[in-house]
Picture 1 (cartoon, rainbow, N blue to C red):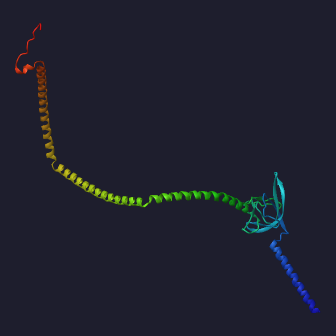
Picture 2 (picture 1 turned 180 degrees about the vertical axis):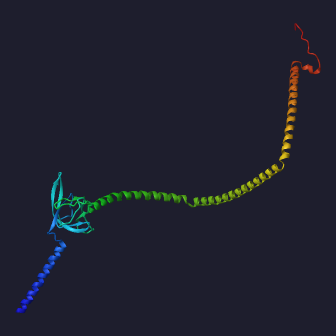
Picture 3 (picture 1 turned 120 degrees about the horizontal axis):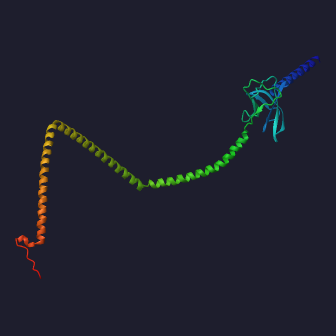
Length: 287
């Protein structure tokens, strides 16, 4: 009997220890904030936030949300959250709180980003906040944009395909057998013309070389016979001067001859018989 009592006592003691351990684990999981400082934050949208939501400071868990209640602020409804933060935890005055979701399927939490101010907030103060972007709203907005974009894109793609098909048909028409044959002939003629042009260029090069050779020889001749050429040019100048003088005399004689011919022609017009040496007939008065 005594042994049974001992067994019952051991079992009860073991059960009590298990309960204490379970209670301790629950406290560790939920956080023991019996001795905590109170802070407040206000948000316009608290979707997914409820009592017990974790509060983190640069990712480190420091408390939880104790309560949430709506308040009126300048005619607009805002939501005031009461935060229980570890006692003695220093929060700079320029720190900012926001609602975040650390993972896609994780619960939302209040994240306090550390400021740089040397002065800390006092317990009971309100922490500055920034509104977080709602991922679901963002996804819905993107989905709406896609719904509007896809039909327009499909229409543009269809128009592009029509233009491509038209262009392809034009290319097929251009690349018909007849046109391809003409193109081949054109390429053949182009090759022949290119060869002819190459030969012509070579001919020009040879002609250029020959001209250069002639110029070189001419320069040598002029250098070697410069005195003779100078004498020849002087003699030619003298001859031209003499010819010029004779030409002036000839022109003078021709001018005199021309005047005599004019006088002789005028005499013949007046008296054609003058050429026979007869006198002009006497005019009879009274006839």
